[in-house]
Length: 301
Length: 301
Image (cartoon, rainbow over all chains, first blue to last red; front, side, top):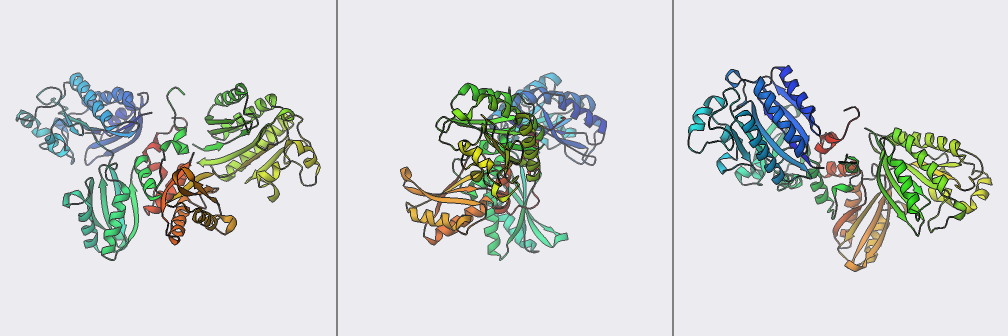
């Protein structure tokens, strides 16, 4: 069964009753799983982690928009996190038996649906972006809700769907598709911050490293060691094992060794399987051979 | 949710209608999943691969005994595979959220139940065995159905449950608990069979190697290479990565390298996670972080 993850970011992190209502409306959708809800009062923002198939998303995401647009007024919204709209950003992420193309198609069809239902301007981003200027969320969101009317009037900033001016209280929304992001840290057996920074610089794309790696060197002061803190933005193309082996090798150069690594938060099973296959030189292995995978519910069974 | 695997071997591999009936009776049990049914006409034997929790097993396994005892007459049964009874052997295997102790307790309670319901002698084996002589299936089964009455009359061969003489048509049954068996092969970049045999000898317990490894060297003649063919009988205590690394190192001694490895059939996810944690030096990782694991149905959700 196809599993698509969706991580809508909603501009409400303080009124718990509203957040609960939105989560409950999602839970009521057949096939929709609400895996996590994280709210931050300072940011005044909540992040929902959802999973389901395309049908569940098509039914559930418009309900989330409906509830959020009714409850949230951006003209009275304050918080530290930048935002453009009531449902600020909605990425669809392929997890299992779903491709990036499936997620792009889903993003577009849901964008079309909610834009017409709620007269809401929608920008497509990341893999669903219609132009290179709209690939990065930060570029679309620059100016925030307060600057949105002026921005939308500029050439090149007509939305992908919906009206050419902001929704009066819900602003605009950014919908798209991207790979799952993996937060991965590698701790070094040293307190030398310069070493962690040099290794981070060697492995990240921005300074000549691997294409889908963001990295920085930071101290773990309470432990007296340093960490290479990494975001992997496309594990299919830049796999975990390659990053790990590269950090290990770069560390050797400084006479430093890897103490341990850690995965923060959720990781798709496929990202782990890649590493198993690499280290054990596994051939012809399929995720269907993992006993637990046989235990998932199948449609119609 | 606890997942226990059960792999009953039934002495019927030719009459498809009987095999289907038995599988259907298992499928009708709430919480019971029939993952696989393999029948072999030459062996005249079928192997059911089941998964579920203790309640599903307690409800379903006696149904399997009931159907098999009604349909199978060992006095008229012929096949190449050794057998003692209609339901010949029934191992319970801990997969997730279940311990070996849980499976031993389940084996005993189901043994007691079916022995009294069907007046059937039951021997406990492997981790559930009551004496060291009953640990190995082969020792219990030696003499087969035809020699069973004589064997049961000997000192030391009273059954663990049920009457002291064979069931007239269903013989006796062997029930127990064991770890999942992993079939794992490592192919070498050479046609030298002596090297595969020496490596197999170095890694297997019987000749001084790792405790839970059975191994032999065999030629893959169509490919012109050799293979170390391995059974891992307890992956928790002898993990895959340790076997792989040991074979790699032994191969170096002969100037030979590992071409690839392969896992045959099903493998518990935990056996793969061990290897990930080892090679990536992962600390503090939990299977709950694998996104797909969050998608399994929870009781009451």
